Image (cartoon, rainbow, N blue to C red; front, top):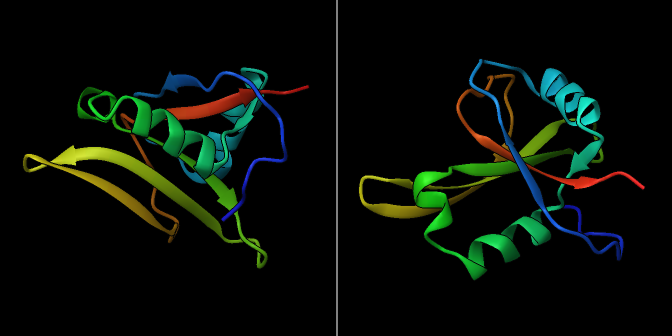
Length: 104
């Protein structure tokens, strides 16, 4: 799981209301001048405001050493707050808020 490379900056969120696969989600980051937030930066946002994920399920993604897409998400399900970390099996995502950092 990647850790930020020392860059500081505000984590920016955007929402996509359509079903997209990881490669297409990556293009959405690029269109906005963003790179996916590292999981540690995203976790810090959710730690500072635990209720944020109650109304804004959010996440980020990255590729592992073998080129597989992986993700972390923060959300609320059945009255419980959840953090999920896993490898994507090609399934798409819809309705989530994605976390990015401005590209330098």
